Image (tube, rainbow, N blue to C red; front, top):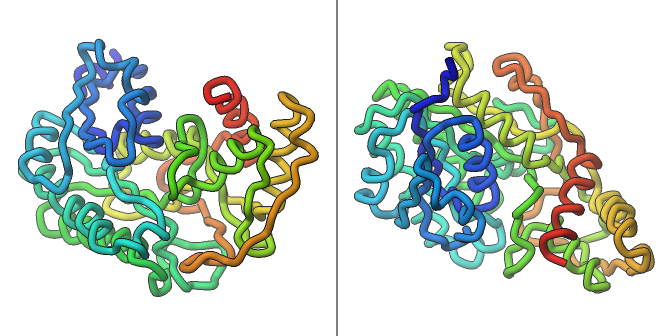
Length: 327
């Protein structure tokens, strides 16, 4: 018998990039899925294809409102909490709103999940929690001081989750996402992530601007690896694997210069002229860390995590999706 039948998952921020991909995956696996989203950064078009499905429910609401959280979590076996205001620059410009959503909203969701008797609360944590720690690769129990209001909010999430698991017995798992990319990641807006933004600029034959000399590096992580981690975190029966945090990454780092090279290579298959588009270098960005690389040993050991997509494999898939859907 399919163990997913009749199990209900609440995905907060389910109309966003990562959330909507999680919706697709779990609906396809036979789960009932509820989405709570206020469409501040998500888009209804990302979940439009599920709206007529009887196993899918959309609740338009805000995690800053405890009543919305309580309504959304009713009857849920699991919560996959993706709702947040991302972006380091946005948090520097407006720390109060980032705090209201990422800390106040997170606490509301924990309270609602506790009161509803949810089995497990899996939440999107962030690699920004490593802050000014210079050690590479990043290992879960070695962090530094946060370098932005956003990073503070994501660290506070981990502290709250830990206290709730100790105090109220709710199982929590935090997934420290490292530079996730892939289909449906929004290329528009002031705080667009670097990969979709660069892809759109190349497709328009515009020169993308790299912050700094391009030698900063990141552990770019394809969306399907992130889906795998969420599913493993949600379903693991290993008692040692819960009430902790995991790096959610591929475990390899790529410089921005190399990233641009890969994007040009894959996009040139669709439009040869893209190979000749020049890149512009600008100043480094406030709050940015120079290098990021995850150790994924803990996730491999405790969750049997085995990421399927390298940066190049993921970029090839993502570029194809952008070309077919946004050109």
